[in-house]
Image (cartoon, rainbow, N blue to C red; front, side, top):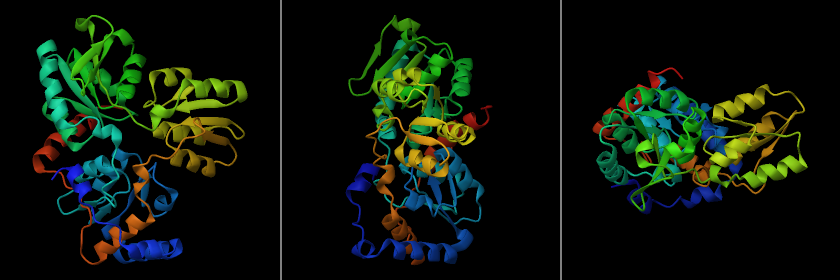
Length: 368
């Protein structure tokens, strides 16, 4: 049964959780955490709701949390508060006696879903016909286990938004060209920063099953998968231009999952960690417009009341799939553990794990 089939057969949230007050839910979660002790580890992604982050034993980005899960050998249960691909990575890295649980299977990632393995295998065949054995696949860690495994068995690797430049440089020591999955914007922004011109990049459209490029096809160095983050694509140059008029003292800092035009128009761009650290170190009284997920922006504003911090998009909503996990679903998962049930366990098969871990290892063995 694939992921979408699982989602279609989900159980309804028991009514009892809707009848409990938030204080009752919080009290019960804390009680279960005390009972399970070191047997339970709750990683929480930066983009999660505050009501969930409250119970996280660690917060961070997806790979960081998967690595912390791997390092926590005492944890029998890893209740991953993030999205599906993150829990997959945690399962790939952790030991066989550890169980990774996603509190709500509907917590997915539209970007990761834009590159499925069937589409990727078909694209690889067509691209090999055009370019032969000159392409190395790289995938953003925001991808499914199957796509990570595809890169692993074809000599490629994973990348993060923090080490994308180093990994793209490495890729070009291996092959003449690279296929960058699944986020075209991170791939384009990274390649451009390394001196690759836009006309040297092409887009693979998995729906139309075609390669789109501006210049001669033989000059293409980077093939970008036509995928994107639905949150980061909502930031626009018009928003930056309006801000320049109304608040010229404000620094615009955005994530490289934003479009090329937005990244070029901003003052600074970088990974989630980079954004967090830059604002943390900023002088009191400074003003920041942040182009990333709203839960994180609001949390940064709460953590740094001495600075003015707000979203670059004034109408931005939190990531819908990230927000699937709430107090109700977290408590439901924990209550099921108390009666011996693994509620929504995430398991990756052995072959996919081996090949996916190979892609991860190639990245982790490189300097960032």
